[in-house]
Amino acid sequence: MANKFTRYLSDFGSGLIEGLTKPKGQMADYRHATRLFVDNGLRLSPKTKFLFYVRFEFENTVRGMSQFTAKHQNEAGLLVKSVDLPKFSFDSLIKNQYNRKKILYKQINYEPVSIAMHDDSNAVINAMWALYYGYYIADRHLPDAAYGATHLRATSTPQDNFNYGMDNKISPPFFKSVTIYTMSRRRFVGYTLVNPRIKSWNHGEMNYSVSEFNESTMTLEYEAVKYTTGNVSVGTPKGFATLHYDTVPSPLSIAGGGVATLSGEGGVLDGIQQIFGEVGSGAAFDTPGGFLGTVAKTINTYKNFQGLSKDQLASEAINILSNPANITAAASSVGGVVGAIFPKNSGTDTTTTAIQKSVVRRP
Image 1: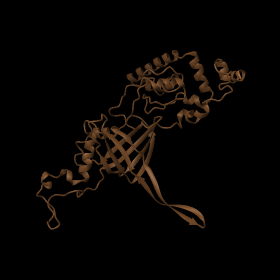
Image 2: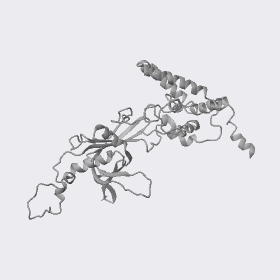
Image 3: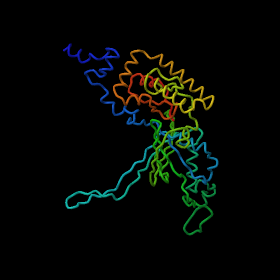
Image 4: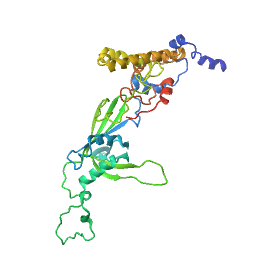
């Protein structure tokens, strides 16, 4: 039994040359399970739930909107803690067509989505709800006299000067749209809720016995969903990365130092790709800052290459050359925006270890 076991593992640890000729040996390994998610730059890798962005678009004619500035409009989306993606259901009917079952659609239903938001200390979220409440409900703007103990309304008396409830004579919707963006590999998918309206709002709960953060929750109904896709950059999607965003390069990116790996985000191949890309496009010489940034990337890439051990080079070379698709994937980016690194297993132990030590920056 010992001889058979040794024979199965004979190709492992026998050097780079033999490893390149027989990269897998005679025993299959984890590559069978990872081909789907790793090949072609992690093209089919699952998205992480924390890479998302919400954009609220308001009707500018809303009373008090001038005080709720464009800055607050951007901040409202950043204060979203969690959000449901759109949900659908169909009302269907099963007909019997000469004993053959036939399913017919009657209508589509757009299921409400729930959005949880931080109850921030500056009351941005509270102000957004107060504007919404006052836009649709007249009660918020009535004076105290409208609710006096002697002020009664009865069917036998004529209507007074106060309008109550939804007797507010409004027509345009408060929200023009609410769009939820999911992100991965510097691409976004947008889900735009058409003509959304709040079905319910919950201010949360105060409690002396806990130290948790409070949150406000709203449920939205909507009339349709539109889909968009595109590349992520500063200001795309609208308002993204333009406010309260960490622009200092991640320590795992080439500009921030990079990592001593051959492949993967922030590795040597990624650095070479970025350097030649900036030189070839002329971006390295457009501005003094661009030139200095390219110089810094070159220095970091050289240092990371020097930090590679022979064993590490052999291991990563085997992983890349064992599948031609990995050569392209080796320098592919999987983060949200350029210069930002998010946890994503690249398929190599070294990259995974480095990422686990990083600080995650949420968009």
